Length: 398
Image (cartoon, rainbow, N blue to C red; front, side):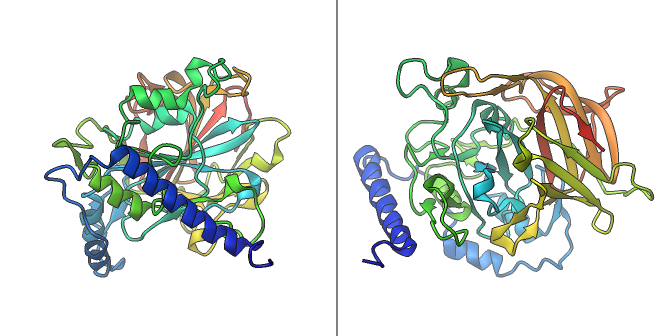
């Protein structure tokens, strides 16, 4: 009886259940669909062989189109067969530390509900050298979909459900319905680029790990995902570097990047702000580390770390605070809305300095542009970019 009540048993049972659900759903709905003709899928053995040749001491000569970071040629060979992943990862205090965030190229943070923030994590170049495991994967919100849509045609969008009017009684207002929006974008179709555990994705892409934190947590904090498995499945669905013969980045607009040039005397060595008043667990502080010319992240007064990679502290070369209009709660499910299109004020931190400027995004698919007060587009320092969507009117101390 003790074994049957153990977390290990629950974990094994979760794997079996997810597998059976995924296999059953796939057979029932998609048994008539075979691999798209002409699709080239990189097998795990081919990927392992490529990674065995990666020497991170080799010259980093290849620029990442997502954040300008410099990588080896072998890493580029891997990511060039793929398209970006945009994955929803939660930040509930009970779910920390997260897994895999230190390998993301760009991260967006905004409130999901009730003052609790959530992340949209963009993976492409930083995930080439390893099979990145991410957790805890959670549900989508409409404004995160808007940001994900910037990353070329049909990015791999990973999540566990999302805001929608499941009851049919208007519990979720129409302009907050993330899942309906995914359908209108053409992402949420059988074997599409929308990877959702409540739709057509299961093990081995997603699974629940009740043992991840070594302590008991609610089930909603336990969903993990493998990026390698997601990329393999995406290839089988026809979403490698191309889809129907069209490269994912045909319409992608890259930001401008420059080499780092740290200030001799930092003008902004500490950045602190909150999202909602009296929600201390979600207050953020970034501390400038002169040795690495990067900002180290603290959340709720504690170092924010990556469990998957030896609890390394999360950091960023660039920290962007974009002030957005907050509306809500807008319905009975207490969903919030944040402006993603239009324009607003912004603060861009890098090299120990700060640029006061603006952000602008003309449509859902358009790239968010950041400019200084003269209207010139800002160039980011090569490396991780962390974008904080903070309610307009909030104080940011630096």
